[in-house]
Each structure stands twice: as structure tokens, then as C-alpha cells.
Length: 243
Image 1 (cartoon, rainbow, N blue to C red):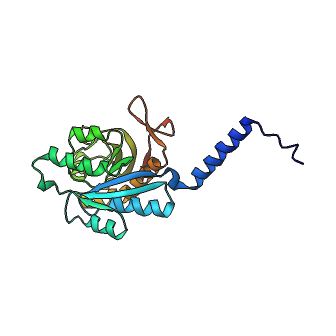
Image 2: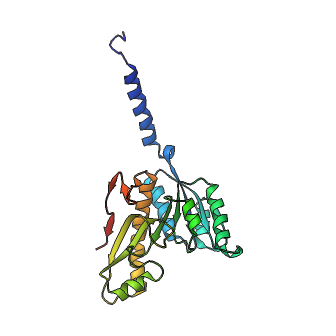
Image 3: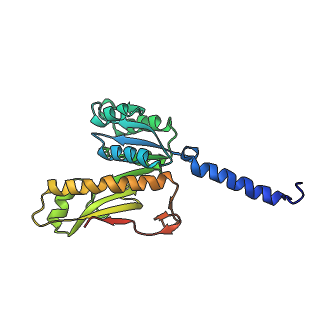
């Protein structure tokens, strides 16, 4: 009665491939990428990333939140969310290298695919950056390469630019540089203050950083031979503008 069902080896291979693919596509945890998040303060970007991941069902596992400040408000928020946390107080170490070495040990114990800087107010040593090459991600409050460093909103207003914003990028040993994953821009308004501009930029940080992390979780981000970010193999500019 089964004489019409003649499966070849290639047929079974095709069937098994697509069966396994279907399992992985429907079970995001089967291929969930692991993230460690570093903070220094309240971690508002961290909160947005985690909340949006949970509500949208990303294939992401946030394995630990680490702070360099003992009383960082974001650590308590993470604990309330049931996340694993750690505090590595930088003031307890003799120098930056000793702190970075210990921080790297704590991170590596969780075997993350990516390490996200979310308001982590420490300049990392070249050795630390090299250890997590192409896995260390930051958000900076300017449209890089414009206005690296601190007081970016003051710099933007003083320069008289029409647009300001934020940049999600891979970290290199050059401060506030590295392959750009995504950017978001806001207009600089007449008579803007640094405080008002900062709030406007923060609102788009809360949109563009989670979006970029989702791309990472879904395995859509690569760095090509030219050192630029490619999304699903296509090199393009990922700029979101808030009109």
C-alpha cells in the first residue's frame, strides 16, 4: 500500500534539514545568543533592551549585568528582573589594567557572544578590547565620527550643526570609534540647551540600541573585509531620523 512513497537519500536529507530548520526557527532559545551588559548608573538603555527583548521574543539570553559602581541603580533593577548580576568596583584596583583583567575574568565566565556597554563610564584598555574583538558594542551620544568624548551635546550646539544623535558601534582601541552598526538622528532646534538636546537624543537611543541588539541576537550582523558592518551581507547605512 506504500508503493508510491519512494524516498531517496537526498529526499530524507532535504526533509531532515527543513525539519531541523523549522525547530530552530520556532524555538528562539535553541540559537539564543548570550549577552553580558556593563553599566555604571541607572542603565536606562539596558532596561529598554531587556524589556523589548522580552516583549518581542528575541533569540537572546541576558546572562549577567555587571556594574563598576557598587550602588548603581541599574543593578537593583536587574536583580528585580531575576537577572544574574555582579559588581566589580574599579576603585578597589591599583590601576586600570588590574581592573580590566578582573572584569574580563568575570565576563568570560559567562561565555557571552556579545558584551554591551550601556552607560559604562570607564575607558577600557587596548588589551581588554582586543580580548573581545568584534564582540564589544557601545552606544555613543553623537553621530560618530563627529564629537567623540564627553559633553557631546554641548559640542553639537557650539558647532552649530543641524542634526545630532547617537551611534551604536563595535568598540576598538580608538576612543569612540569602530564599525558603525546603526545611528539615529534628531534635529538641533533653535535655542536648544544641552539638557533638552540630551533628552531628545536619549529617546532615540532607547529605540536604536535595542534594534541593533536584536540584529545581533538574530545573527544578522557581520563585519566585512573592509571593516564595515554588513547587515545580512549587505553593506549599508542604518540611519534612523526623528523628524
